[in-house]
Each structure stands twice: as C-alpha cells, then as structure tokens.
Length: 186
Image 1 (tube, rainbow, N blue to C red):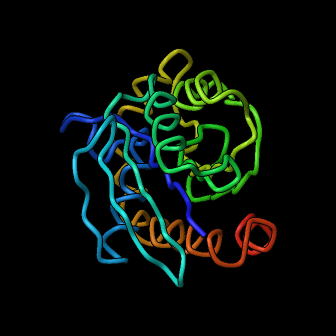
Image 2: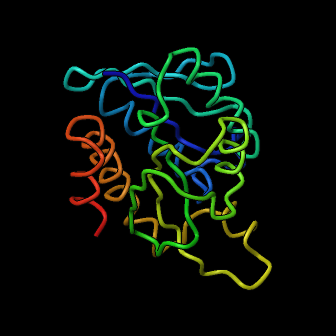
C-alpha cells in the first residue's frame, strides 16, 4: 500500500511556522520521526518514508498555497495514487485551536489550498486532516491571522498537537480512515 501525504503551506522563511504552514510542520515531523529527509523535486519538497509495510510519499508543495493543486495532481499521477490514499494536511479556521478532524471528503470551506486541489484534481473526494487554528481575529483580518505565528499561549501546546497529528497519519495508513476517525475526531 502506498499513500501520498500532502502538507500544505507556503515556501519561504517569512511563512515558517505560521498557522497557514501547519501542514509543512506536521510533514516535517512525520519525516523526522520516520527517519526521512526532503529533496527539492518537481513542484514540491519530497520525502519517501516507510511505516509498517506502507510506503508514504510525503510532499510539501513549492507552488505556494493557492496553486497546491498543481503539485498534488502531478504527484498523484506520477506515483499512481488513488484519491482515497491521498491525505492533505491543512489549517482550519472553523475548528478551535488544538482540535484535529479527519474528513474523507468535503468542501474547501474557503481554504485556497483546498480550492486549488479541488479545481485541478477534479473534486472533493480525498481525505484531509484539518488542524484547528481557531478564529480569534478581528473582522477582515483573516489573512493576517493565518499568516501570523501561533500565539504565545498556543506555542507550548504545538509539539504535542503535531505529534498527535503524526499519530493520526500513522493510524490512517495502517488501520484505515474509519477507525482513525473514531479514535481521533473527538
């Protein structure tokens, strides 16, 4: 079994560790825990990892968030991975900080990275790990909020939440989405 794990984010030091780049941070931790490293390949930083007999192809698109679909589409076809074996890791304003949600399909909910994937890859039928970043921002300041670092109160909780996200990914590829949702979507 092989999987495409997609951490969404923006390249460049000015975006490092922002709320919008949580997908990159989780992908980095997954590679670190499984002893892999990223190489800069076509449209993405790419790492190939092994976990309990599964092959995990992990990408961090270098196309910037709004064009993520281009990278996802390329790697899905290049590796011949079906949509149900693609897991996209994304920040979510509609979920409180610290909550994780695995969904097997659904709308973009206004997220530009997911909109791009839907548009280029042809639909909403792919799993996603939604990492709650909360919505603690003044009206009209959504972009500033997601492109900012996590608050000082949130930062101490991040390592455990990133580890929990890695555990969710490992569960997804071994015991499957249904049991993973039961175990993690609380």
